[in-house]
Amino acid sequence: MDKVKVGRISYLNVLPIYYPLESGLIKNNFEFLYGPPAQLNKMMAEGLMHISSTSSIEYLRHSEQYKLLPDIAIGSRGPVQSVLMLSRKPVEELKGCKIIVSSQTHTSAALLHILLTEHIPVHPEYETGNATELLETGERPDAILTIGDEALNLRNHADYPYKFDLGEEWINWTGLPFIFGVWLVRRDAADKTQVKDAIRSLIKGKKWGQQNIERMSEITSEKSILSPKEMKSYFNGLVYDLGEKEVEGLKVFAKYLHKTGQISHIPELEFVNI
Image (cartoon, rainbow, N blue to C red; front, side):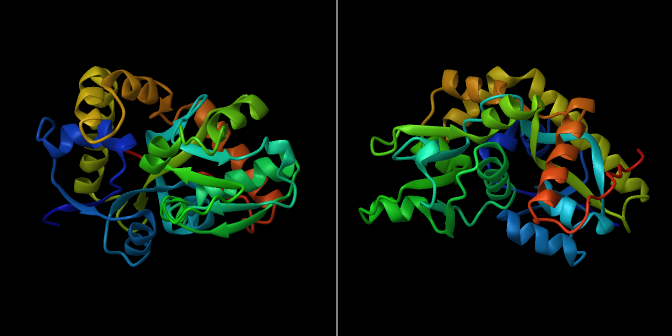
């Protein structure tokens, strides 16, 4: 094995994990493969990568193919700021209304469905679309679900005064963090020495990023409309660990995915041994 192939989603929220690895601050034997989540999921399924970050729902749907990396995730323990339903009316008034959902998200769309079925049962309709492009045409749907950089850019849109932060709603309802993304290793690569070394390097990268959030906030703000102070506030609301509370939150998510018919069974969570 020449290089360990690692899938890399190009969102700002994972920069604290990858920056020390991509910049050479932490030595590694990685070949990064960049792409949107759906493309990386496909490449992992086809065996073209060894490790990748992916949405938590992707793991819960295909756990037989993968093992979880320990102690690394992307989630929230309160307002997440970058997973928002923006609405023209209060959420309680969305019964039967149409919500435009970003095609880039599977976990967030599934979480919204759970929240608006089990937590605040308004049972709206959902339609996949590009919120930014739609708004640029002058259309103003009742509500839009946006994630990542798009959510950070649209969160103060004048025509959408009501913000429904999915991370905040989840913890208010369940008392647990919500895990949007996890890191996976293919089962057929999990025991390889180089892959285990790579996993340890990823965890080192995460810890470096957590210890250098000020620096990460300054670097990331250069690529965003947010100031360093706003970026720091954003990063401080995120979870990069996968400890007991985070694992419990992931299990509760799986329970509600099954209850709402979005997964066929509730899998056991299996971690790679490093």
